[in-house]
Length: 356
Ligand code: SF4
Ligand code: SF4
Image (tube, rainbow, N blue to C red; front, top):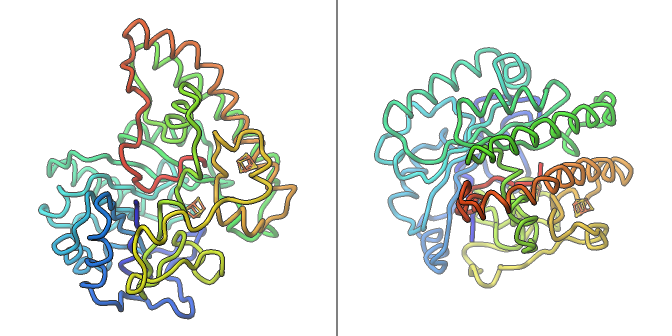
């Protein structure tokens, strides 16, 4: 299973999406459990993937090093804002299976939400770790907001990263402060159609563009194999909070549905499949393809049903556009232009939620 391990709740940025350091009652800013308790818990899962998460996880560099030195996980990944990557020592850097770096596209769109100079700093650090010979998967993790242009932003980042993933800036921010959500999503849908066209053109040349949301969805469409919630929250992905408590995912420890257990009392097999997505996703005709998008949204419906349905319409649109390419992909695999495992991504749960 996959475990987000929060090394700290502190952050050195104050992005508009989340506001920086979280101060939540009952959630300490830094790790307060005994490292041996984490090692004991994780050692009971031979398939454990640890994803370092925060806050900004590299602000607690010593904790990250300690965990990599003492906790027996199958793989380690890192989700970071990228500003401190130059401080990560080689011996730990090269053991990371994947690094997800948060930014939103080019300089302008990134700096609007994340602070002036952030884009240049990230790019400097990205080039730095490439220069140090890092061979793992480098993933741009965008938040797509009112300021973005999905086609332009994804296309730009595909030139710098192995893969690009994004999440729509919906359901977290204050709805009152948002402009015309429907108009913004209409523009988004048009950009997605252009990206899918590029995805198809690249396939003809034997290439699979590293657009994270497209690849696993495409695999499902090709094979008909259904999925549960793609981020895995509450099923086979959990968050180990700084207190040692276990949540369905890191995002809402203050909400009851999210509280699962504790590393000192529970076992990995005991918490597996603790939460399942509920209504209205259970009634949805594309549940097997979408998976239910987000457990938090499913449980809270924080922007109301109408906007929930509008976001689902964008998910359906993306799936419909990708479906048009299925016959072509089948043909290309048969002719050997594409290998049969072309859409086997991600190799492990690397922290990408897949459905934006
Ligand atoms: S499209 Fe919407 S309703 Fe359907 S499964 Fe996904 S999130 Fe749930
Ligand atoms: S998609 Fe939702 S449920 Fe899944 S990890 Fe993200 S916030 Fe949590």
